Length: 442
Ligand code: GDP
Ligand code: MG
Image (cartoon, rainbow, N blue to C red):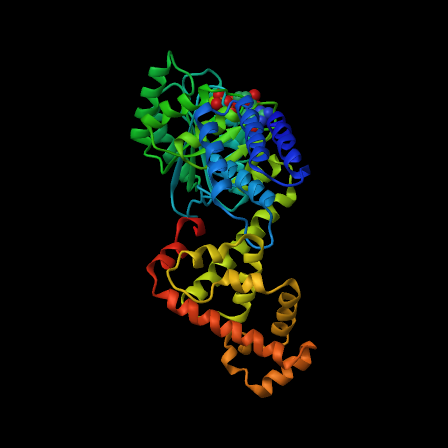
């Protein structure tokens, strides 16, 4: 699937993964290679340009969450932006209510795979418990109705077509017939050829006016180059396109044209066609698609775990800002600071004097950090969340449990109290609030 795009993207990422430290030059090089790969695959120049500037901007602005490297971050950004290019994380666009009559109309130019896809969809929804019916309104191409009739018979789906009467009439009769057969989900195949494009678009508009579909699916061939986007634009200027199916993803097509059309129309890809057989239809999920494209099963795991880490850090910062800091939060922030100086950046902007986290962190060597960690591990959950519970009795117990001295435990509690007080003062500071709610955390 999209073999050449896949291999050139993988070359770019392999270089990044194999490199030592990540600096701006390496990021630029990687992004340039990603750009080249996308352009060669026929993704439009405009989309490529905005994707790469987005990656570069974010790479400059964002910090990896604790425990991750800049390299992880750049990989994630490339992943994120490719997912966005492919329609993002929208929920699956075609989930008709069972038992309710739903009409879905397929549009697209001749040869894009509408008729085949109509039958594939019929089988897919039948297998998912729907009562499906098929109607062909392609009276333009000879044999189009026969083609769908044969496919419908193969999978035992009620079917109607009548090329000898006007399509509006054929549609009305078809609806009566498939309803009689018990169909609720009605799939309508249309013509893709006409005297000229203007004629075709006019017909599509007329057909939509009397079929009144609940959803229009635009079918696009993965082999189509840059013209895919303008074609998609013509269709969507006449009918409201609700989702896209990209066909022939099994072939050697570059795919970028179809993907550009997706990005321009901003409608989700519902399925992809991956072969001529009626079973060759896959539900489309942008995230899994991109991880396959990048050839990294583990990339998705990395992205997920980074999102969780970001989320946890956000929650921890919110707790700190609201004055409900736990010992775990403190430890995490000090460790994070040691890596990248995140919280201290916030503290540095505060006009309050006294202690700053970077002072704390600078003072505390690795040794102490490790000691604090084992001390905290020897506390129960309640004590970690509310260290004021820790009296001298408990201090003895915790010191013993962690193999440290009572003074070490006291020192930790003292630092905590100091920091908490600072944060409480800081809480009144609006600037902190805006920083914590600022774009980098979104
Ligand atoms: P229509 O003119 O838009 O109705 O297109 P058809 O459904 O008649 O399909 C045109 C050709 O593309 C046929 O030979 C199909 O078998 C083929 N085709 C459709 N979808 C796929 C697909 O996902 N993969 C492959 N390899 N061929 C497909
Ligand atoms: Mg057809």
